[in-house]
Structure formats: C-alpha cells, structure tokens
Length: 223
Image (tube, rainbow, N blue to C red; front, side):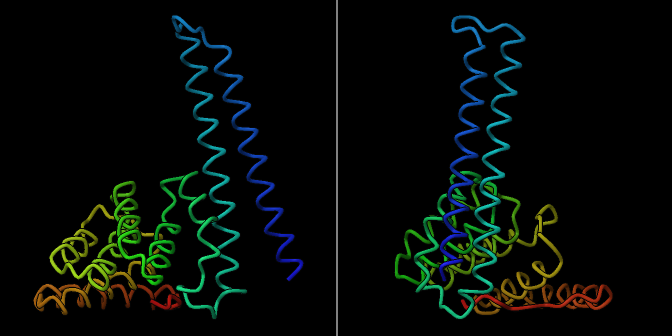
C-alpha cells in the first residue's frame, strides 16, 4: 500500500511539473508577441506556444489516465463503481486537461450515476459526446445511462442509433463488439426488434473478424 501511495504521489508531482513547464513555455511565447499589433512572426510564435501547451496538457492527461486504468484493473478490480469515488479527482483532472480523452468520461459518468448523482452523471456523459461526437464508446455510454437511469427511451435510442453511423470511431474491434451488444439490448427493450436484428447480424460479422484475428472479448465493467 505504501508503494501505491508513493506511485500516486509521483504521478501527481509529474503532472504538476508538466503543467508548470507548459505554463512557463506559454508565458515565454506570449512575452515575445507584441502587445498592440502582432506581426506574422509574433502570431506564429503564439500559435507554437499554444500548440506546445496543448501537447503537454494532453500528455499529462494520458499519464493520469494510464496510471489510473492500471489501478482499476489490479488494485480496485473487485471494488464496485459506486464505491470508487476516490478516483473522481483524477478523472476530472484528466478531462479538464484533455477533453478529447474519452475513457475518463465513461468511467466518471458511471461512478456518478451509481452513486445516485444521476443528473451529474448524465450531464458528464452528454458533455463527453459534445466534445467527442464521433466516439462510439461515448455515444453508447450516454445511451446506456439515459436508458437505465434517465428513463428516456427515445433519447437513448437516438444515441444508440448514432453509434451505428459510418463515421463513428472505435478504439478497436472488441470495443465495437461490446458496444454493439449494448445497442442491440437497448433497441430490443425499446421495442425496435427489426433494427436490433440488423445490429445482431453486424455483431455476428464482427465475431467472425474477432475469431479470425484471434482476439479475446472481455466484459470487465460491472454496470
């Protein structure tokens, strides 16, 4: 446990150092840009400084999430989500640093909903979709929360259908498989049997692809 605490402390120190470095770099770039009228060179420096800051922020967010993800699958694996409120500060920090990092929205919204903070959980899931409209994971996440906690079948079906769009992005084919299974369940419960049957056929196609690739489908979320 002491080693775990030290690791967490080290992660926090690293993130603070990275952000401090980013802010110093941004301030340095800003100091070189004329206050009244910006030349082309000044504007280029400003853009470079902003890009630098953005890169460090996204890196820091990734460090936070990767560390937490490892803990969730090891130290906290047997702990129900509604008891994992201690992970919320890290999740919120990761979202703040990088609004395009999708997994923290997914986990944090479920923690909130399971804790009874349904409105907050739904709002966070909606914000995740707003910031990442092409994320299949977040579309399905929002659909599940709407269906199970928001009791809004129409909105849940709309989000589930949106997850089937051709331009939706998935982390990998296994994530797509599990998400499609959730979409099928929502459609069936909402009385959309014909549409669910089409999703079932797509799941069968994905199953064949997974078998061909020799991948393993794991269901590791206790929703």
